[in-house]
Length: 213
Image (cartoon, rainbow, N blue to C red; front, side, top):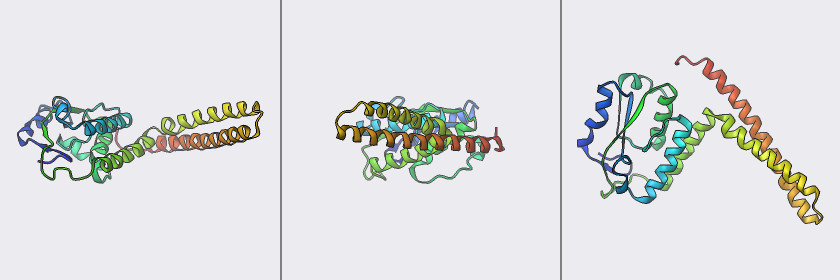
């Protein structure tokens, strides 16, 4: 059984199924990093860490292997699988979608073998960039004020500070550079703050009308 970029042991199948059967979890993810992370290539561990943190930021669900496709779901979680996703970002989208709906997510350790012929379906860089792009889009939807508003405010403040410093510049080229930089930061900051406030209002409206808790 191939799991994106490695080969899993079919003997591990009962591991994620166990917590579903005993009712302790709604979604169980087989993690390649809980016990056997040392067997994973370093570049993949580094990329996986970035994707884990991005997924956790959007879902508030701490996981060690957000891209593992070795999973088990109970009936309730399956019935909530009503979201659109494509490609390798499906794994993160599933975590985000189910976590938002209050599903219990748990991980169990599994093994993985990366020394397999033609085991890598996609280049790790393109895989990671594609998944990260999808996760960032979700985070922007879930937390628009934090994702857009806070950076916008920071840019606005930085632009104002640079603008004030530019007033004290004596040399014309230094003054022009700082003034242009300040204006650009202020404009971008205002745009981001407006975007964050607008998206936050839309998200709040959509959540108030959603049928699920």
